[in-house]
Image (tube, rainbow, N blue to C red; front, side, top):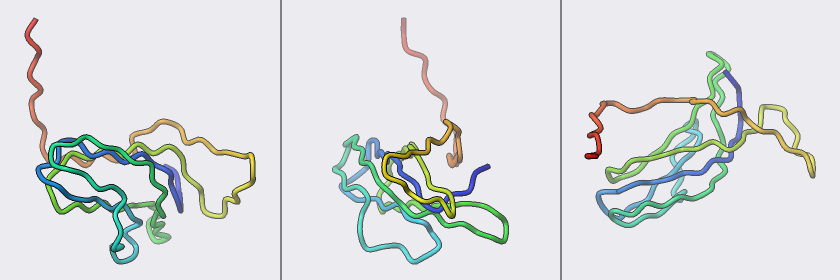
Length: 116
């Protein structure tokens, strides 16, 4: 488990059902009126974004929120984060280990085997 107050991530939408937009934010505040990525129907598109992360001192969990008004697949690839109290220093970097932070699928679908 790690605690973060901001993150850098690559946000990807895949095969949206219609034109739309998606926003990523901390979830601790009202949803912003801006988008993190705009997309067209059926498009696969990605965008690098920096977002605040909500830290709940009651349960020690860091969390984010994602909203889109249309049905789409979403990939979130976290590239890095800043921990509470972390000071950014010119020329310094912190790399997060590759870890699945969340699994949010609500249903599992069988993947068809490709014909040989």
